[in-house]
Length: 587
Image (tube, rainbow, N blue to C red; front, side):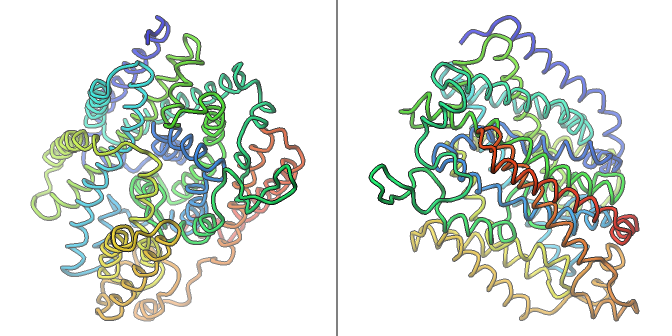
């Protein structure tokens, strides 16, 4: 595949600009660990929010969504649409608490919340498990997309595509190890808008291609159920009899996703109550209110702005390449076959941008765990910030080398998404309750982390279960296991719980701790926050659906959902201006 001169100019200009940003922020990032991993804890909400969106907009996401749509139609996106509910829960109930904790990493919170050797072990375990092992898995599946792009777009061998992807990871490691989080987030802003613009351009070219011929022709050519937003049990055939809908998610799977997955499963970027690199962005904001607004912006942009260009292309490739088995690769073929010069370069840059924003975050976030929660916690007893910065940059490079080595383990994006959701099933509730219930201890979280993996293996390799049955099994056994562990092990010392309560002022079931501290009833406006949470969910889903119905020229449901979106927005504005909520966020 030969690119035009304008395409190469766009690609080279983007790479040069990216490395210049990294070099520009090198000195600022080198002050101390807070500067390197949290940007000095001074990011305004809009910078942190855009960075959250950009880092979850990976090169794999458009391809993965195309695969979902090809397999289960639009309703297949409930695999990830359901996470909005938990994301908004994080926004209104936990974003403030994260920022108030002033932890350097999510894993550091473990020893702020729990006590003893079990807490220390849990912190070290999570630092390696999340920061190294799962981090490498995430980079591996994200790299699948870039390998497919290089293979299909440039028509090169798998090995050459792997080497090209490895070179991209090395490039990212250079600027992220130099600039720390501040360089990562500034690059994220550029990378997000380029990636979004490129995907919108591709959707327009695909819909207007001769093979598709516009939205109406696209709808007519698609299998039954492909454009359904919700699962359909039956559909009418030409003879008037009912038949199973050809292309839609199952009702059982939908109910599992919408009723349980958002609170029960650990998934990177959508952890219940927040965590991972989303927690890193919340911790990097300049105030508790900025943390709330950044997370709110992320939820709205993540579900309302990003999905439809990917979905439209996913539907389009069903028509353009009906016999192609790998619909993820078909997305890249559409890029190759339907973009003119200039637009090709723009979209290649867009995928570079999406890939780099995610990889840079993964390397910086993973290094924060390795250095702050493993090396500094258990081995390095000093506090020389220059030495710790050197260790952080070395850790970034070492993580890069390790992650490149595991890329060959993966070949399917959607399958990895399913694996991550089920492998972390049952862990989510304890991550929520550690903020809300004083009785949760380190054993609760440790048992939940281990049992989710064990029960996943049992469900798949012993009982041969499939989703949603496997999901219900994993959640049930894991939840029962950590509850038993909680009650057969002693609670944390009251002094530890009191220290945590004084630091973050958590809401919920902390009666014995409040009594010990001599403070009265919790004043958190929980009821009003619940109303704001529900308004935000209704508004965001309604914008998502209304936008889709407008695209498909289905005006009646578009107007109905548009009206619900306006009502949700009005309710949200009223609640966010409520004196009790504003006072709570400004404490």
